[in-house]
Image (cartoon, rainbow, N blue to C red; front, side):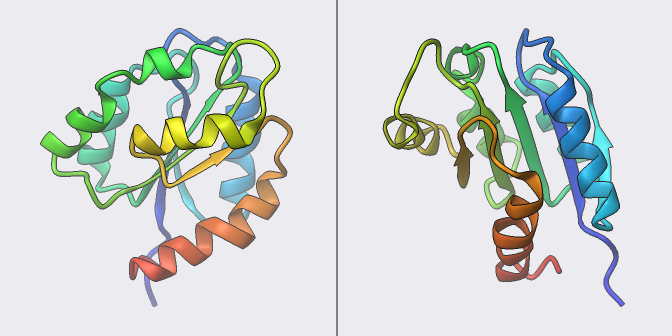
Amino acid sequence: MKKAATIITGTVGMDAHVIGTKIVSRTLKDAGFNVVALGMQVSPEEFISVAQETNADAILMTSLYGMAELDLKGFNEKRMEAGLGDMLLYIGGNLVIGRYDPKEVEPRFKKLGFDRVYPPETDIVTVIESDLKKDLKAKGKM
């Protein structure tokens, strides 16, 4: 029997909106994942460091204050340097300031290395069942 996939969660940058990441973490635990919940105001470097320490399978970041793109400047390069190029990266929430079309924002975050980008109010259960499990299986992690 394979061990449960390890997923790191947290709110990126200076974002102090912790409720979303707590819901994500709890739902992942309930679905049987090993969760390393970093909480709020997590630097990109901390995500990378903890991913290395725990041999994590994925990082799921949240952000609600609209500055995620700025917070993640240089993140993908640092991730690659750390040897985490194959790790699944998901992000969701209010990723930019103001009203926006998620279809316009998604390509910007995909350029930053994210596999999946979700708008606010995305159902985390659907993300787990429709995307995360499928993506982990495709990488041989489930």
